[in-house]
Length: 100
Image 1 (cartoon, rainbow, N blue to C red):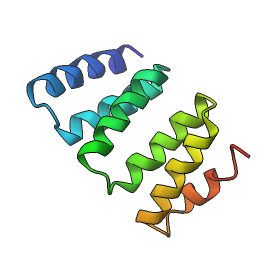
Image 2: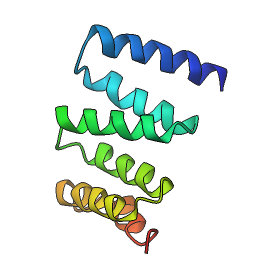
Image 3: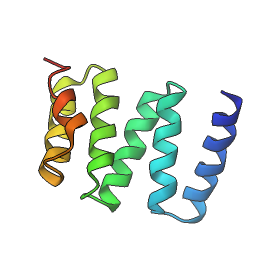
Image 4: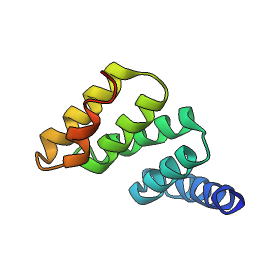
């Protein structure tokens, strides 16, 4: 976990320096999810999606975090967006059934 903590700090610095840097936003959200900081992860995935609303992967990962937070309606909506962007996104189709 220590490596994730270092990565989180580095990505936070990158986001502060390069506001809206999509790669840093996405990776920061992912790292926060891994270490269990779900609200932070949710926030950064939303910021990433604001910058790149056509990222099926970001919508999918947002759905995963929403599901972990028991925000099931938001999770389903996020998976639906991922599928609308990429209808072949099998994991998004599969995860649609998890919150039900």
